[in-house]
Amino acid sequence: MPHIIVKMHAGKPEADKAKLADELAKTLMAVLGSPEKAVSVAIEDYAPADWAEAVYKPDIVDKSGTLYKKPGYNPFA
Image 1 (cartoon, rainbow, N blue to C red):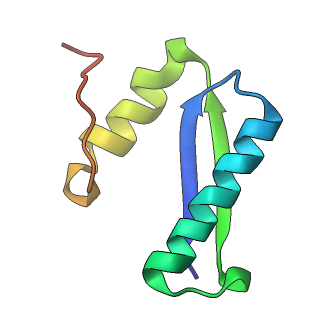
Image 2: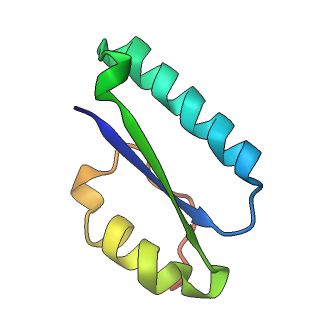
């Protein structure tokens, strides 16, 4: 039962979010062989000013061992 959570800066149109969720689900199904009924995708919007503390630190720094694609930036540098 794969569940994808996308955290991003707020402001993208709903149509773009829906397309992203659809494309991510298709890719997940193709790569992992999961049936469509087992896949879910959530999108969480964050204000840019909140990104470093709300997302970068808890999800990137504190969980670096689970990252398969690390970012090329550091808001704390």
